[in-house]
Amino acid sequence: MSPAIGMHDRPPPAAGRAGRPALHVAIIMDGNGRWAKQRGLPRAFGHRAGVAALRRTVEGAPGLGIERLTVFGFSTENWRRPQPEISELMGLLRAYFESDLARLERDGVRVRIVGRRTGLDADILDIVERAEARTRKNDRFHLRVAFNYGGRADIVDAARKFALAVERGVARAKDLDEAMFEAGLSTAPGSAPDLIIRTSGEQRVSNFLLWECAYAELIFQDVYWPDYGPEHLKAAIADFRSRERRFGGVAADDVLAAG
Ligand code: FPP
Image 1: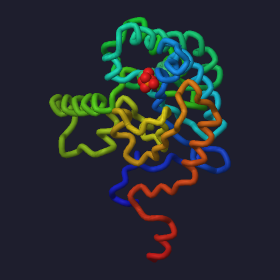
Image 2: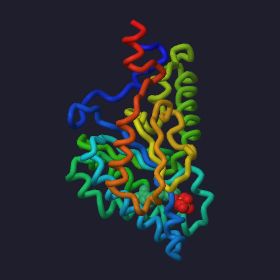
Image 3: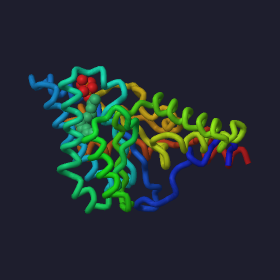
Image 4: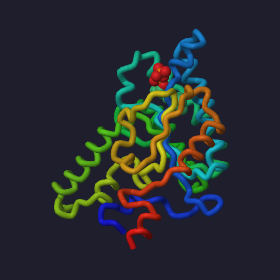
């Protein structure tokens, strides 16, 4: 193994269909507002249609060899939006779990919310914790909703956790390595996505999975999130599968040529 590559940066063990490794896909679900504007509708309608797209995506993902899906539901920066829109997004998270939790539980989906829990209303926290507890034993598919999540904030929180451990005398600064640091992120374990998709045509990372994206492939799709469906996900996976991932090493052919 190259010394530059940590365990967490390597592809997941083969577990998917047709002998292919099961994938972790992360999605920046962008374009809800523009989708609504295009139709002369309030932005809330775009977010509501976005929930339906999320449902379709969760249903379609396992059939495409995806085992983990992390979606960006609400960022630490989204608190800057107008209060009615914030309330709408909180309400949609609540409604999604109220309506879909039983099915997710039955379908073997393990749900986790990643991000900061401080600042969320008690009723949202309650729903989130209930969803996590009820699906804790599931392992067929992992759905992670990044909510009140920011990549930088998560790195700062992990750094603070480690600093506190040093302060308490239960960790030593000289022992810190990438794996130990990563364990402090809210996305751990299994943090690193193989592929990050952003919809709506925008080509930015927008503070999503900053640590975890180190070796992720990036795919930008020119479709507003509310229109997203399994056919778009299938196209993204086909694109991903056509790429060669080298993780800082060299192509397999070049290894042979060098030998
Ligand atoms: C970005 O579109 C989308 C969001 C900030 C929220 C994503 C939320 C959903 C898809 C609703 C479902 C969420 C959960 C967690 C159940 P935008 O509003 O920035 O769109 P715009 O760039 O076109 O204005």
